[in-house]
Length: 228
Image: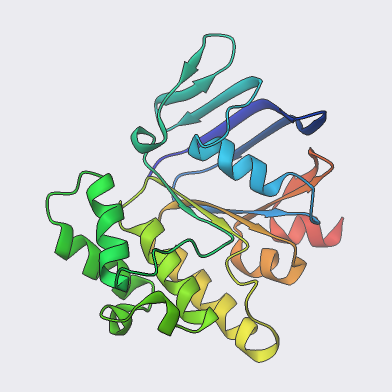
C-alpha cells in the first residue's frame, strides 16, 4: 500500500489544456472515485499517474517516492512506479491465451513467480476459468475481467481503473459494483476509479473527487458529496 498525492497537475494535449492544476490525495489502501462527464480529464489524469502521459507541471508522489516533478525534471518510467492500470479499452493480444496475456504483464513487472502471480491475478479478477481461452472467444464482460487481471498481476501499490464497469447495465451493473467494492476492500490497495456514474462513485469510493473541465470542483466523502 502507498499514499498517492498529486499537486497542481497541468497537462496540455495539442491546443487544449485537459488538466488545469489538479490536486488530490488518496490515503493508504483507500479507493478514490474520480467522477465526471466525458472530457472532464479523468483518463488523462490516470495516464499521468501511470507515467504514460507527461504533465507540463506539478508533482506526483506514490508513497515516499516522487515519480513526477515538473520543476525538478523528475519523470520515473511507468514500469518503475508500482502502478497497475486497467485501460478503458480491452487491449489484449488475440493470438495469445488469457493466461499468456496476463503472464506477459507479470514478466514486465519482473516477477520471479510468473505462473503463481498470473493465476492469483486471474482468480482475484474472477477470470481463472478463462485462462486457456483466446480473447476472440470471450464476452465483453469476460474481457474486462481479464483486463483487470493484467492490472493486478504486478501487485501494484496503486491501482488505476478507467471506467471498469462501462460494459454493464441494470441489475448486472449493480451486482458488479458490490463485487468491485469487495475486491478493493479485500486488496487494501490504494486505488483511483474513474467513472461517469454517480451511483458507482458512491458505491465504490471511500472518497469522491468531482472533475469537470480539467479541474476539481468538489471532493469529500460520499456522504459529503451527496449532501452538498
